[in-house]
Image (cartoon, rainbow, N blue to C red; front, side, top):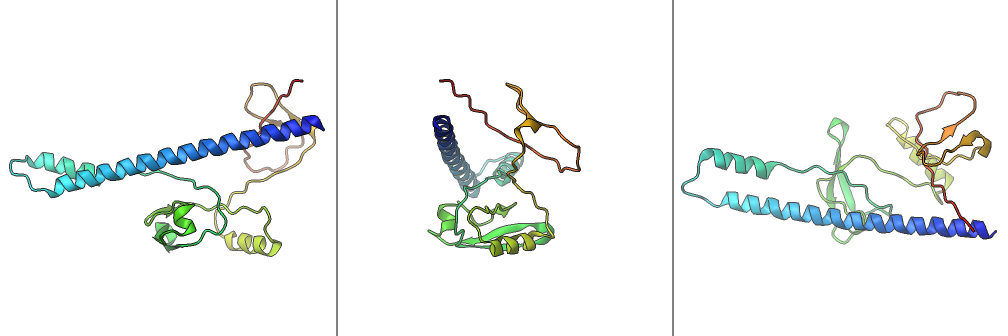
Amino acid sequence: MRSTHNADHLTLCHMCCVQVQKEKLHAELKQVLSQKRSHLRESTCQLAQPEMDTDPTDEQTSVEEASKSVEIVVETEAEAGASGYSVTGGGERGIFVKDVLKDSPAAKHLSLQQGDQLLSAKVYFDNVKYEDALKILQCAEPYKVSFQLKRTIPGAEVSMRPRVPSVEVKGPKAKMAKMVISYTLYCIYM
């Protein structure tokens, strides 16, 4: 009983550390984006000011530098009630955020911005009603979907070697999809 409590405590500590790391990364990302935006604004302002003795090639280089954009992929934190935004586009073009209401959950918690392209959306099934899950899965049927699964298998079928970041699953070679297995191994010495 005591070792289970310790393992739960370690798992909770690990989750807290991961959350802190995510928050730090999110803050750093916001800072970098802010700096990029202000740098682009400064470049654009400098381009707007007329200059007398400029070489046309210098001006062209400055315009090219200002028009370059940095593409980043951001994964937001999971939030319930993602509301306060609208989308546009579709098909090969993609889905884009059309508008975000100021002070909405989408603006505050999801950090959505007008013009962001939605690459994918994760829907978490913890505490979801069967009917809702069924509707979501049926709507997603014609599209590319990946699942995050939890599966219980007998311990005898899994062999782990220390310091090797993989898990070998033994048993019949049934038709299986490509699978990534991650695990955290806690050793408690008393």
